[in-house]
Image (cartoon, rainbow, N blue to C red; front, side):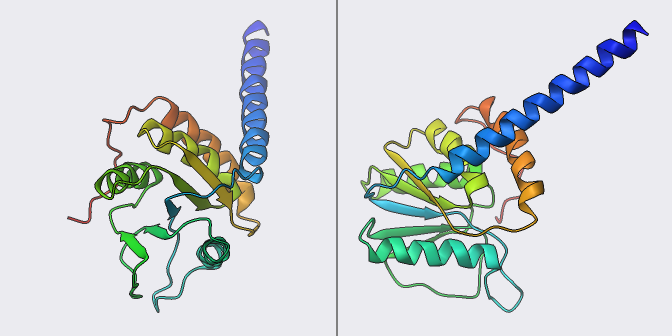
Length: 184
């Protein structure tokens, strides 16, 4: 009976921590920190076989265009794998940015190589807390962020997933690579 109570207490504590984490991820992500930056970083998402972006990626790209037209940045780095579309400057592709961690690492290198200082991250609201953590671990400052206005039922999965992902990134250091496959 005593073991049962201890186990129940542990489970309730884990659920409470997960719920607190979910609320924190949502509140942090919905609070944009929008300032002019040297570079916008658009986190990738699914591209359809015909080259069309998923609805979520389209929302990110549309939001990026709006912010670009408002003068928040002059250069754009789009992360993710190879798509069929081609870009002209000011858009650059980060084809090795298959994870948030790698995108943060590649962005730090891009900023250094191009003598840039600040970045504005664009993604979904639930992704921004982990993005902030990853980009800060690679020394990117100042760092700003803005969420694309897109919501779906999948968010009920994505928010708790981001809480767990945040915990993983919390314990990483900038010298640590992730286990994502390389395109090389």
